[in-house]
Image (cartoon, rainbow, N blue to C red; front, side, top):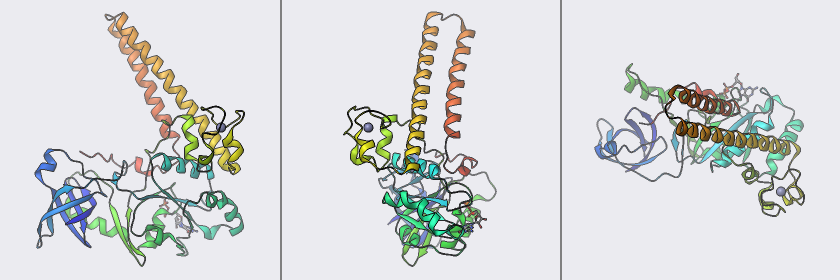
Amino acid sequence: MTGTVISRITQFFTVRVDERDILCRPRARLLKEKVQILVGDRVQVSDLDPVQGTATIAELEPRRNALPRPAIANVDQVVLVFAAREPLFDPGMLDRFLVLVSRHGLSPVLVCNKTDLEDPVVLAAHLAPYRALGIPLETVSASTGRLAGLPALLSGRISVFAGPSGVGKSSLLNALSPGLSLKAARVSERLERGRHTTTHASLHEIVLPEGLAMVADTPGYTHLSFDDLLPRELGAHFPEMVPHLGGCRFPDCLHRSEPDCAVRQGSALAPSRQSSYERFIGELLEAEERRSSQSIREESAVKHRAGRGGKAVRLVKLDAAVREDSRRVARQRLASMAIHDESDEAPDQVIE
Ligand code: GDP
Ligand code: ZN
């Protein structure tokens, strides 16, 4: 039997097999080899005890992708929820998210919620650049229950919802399936019994007229960072630019003010997308600068150590300076994230 892991508590996994939830432990070999099994993984299940509803995970099938925080495998799409109003429509946040998702090779779906709060003409103008990109985009309202094509987009897929706090992610999940959270709570109560456990994301199954959808209960992703992207790689994550890449006079063109830039001439970026591009290029150039100044510092610390091996105190100080610097970079990276930050407060989702 093959099923999908939908939740995990310590080494107990709930596996959904043919509309049935089976509580499973991995077989000894998987434990011994420290095979990591994630929510979303497809697994083979054996030794079913029909009375207890328990079984053994015999084998882990190859996964298509895996994301940290929440740790989920085989994600089909990231659903970015944003609000037409309250919080204010923020194209910069959307553009950043789209780069992040593209950078991780995932497919985005855009969901504009709270459409009941905005004038349709104003909203249409906000959304025009995104409609032009050809990304699936649904305009919905959790309050009025207008879900448009969202159920159809979710059915048959594993989705992770993302987006800033307050845009209506929980309200939407609830509108899709009232009482959604109760099901996961039941399983954890039975297993937790008051002892300390690490929390993991769970997948909720939502039965829709359009089909079965699987949605992660934990919105993501704080760890999708594009700091490590090289400035000249950014264009590949702006779909408008892609057809024109490679046509510029300079191979390292950043498509800003360079002469004979095919990308600037050919791709009609909406003004807001253009300013996002320029802002991100600025950030990536800074990140690159930080990386190179840090590696120079690390190098000089190493030289120092080689030259005067005896002076331990001085060495410690230098090392500490380097470490402090990388902590600062890490903090800045976190601060620059515009994507949802709630999961940062959750306990670390460490997979042993
Ligand atoms: P989350 O933080 O993204 O999960 O957002 P919530 O689902 O908690 O919603 C935040 C607030 O927005 C709540 O007060 C909701 O009642 C409200 N809200 C959610 N969806 C809508 C909507 O479609 N229209 C309106 N007017 N308010 C909404
Ligand atoms: Zn160019």
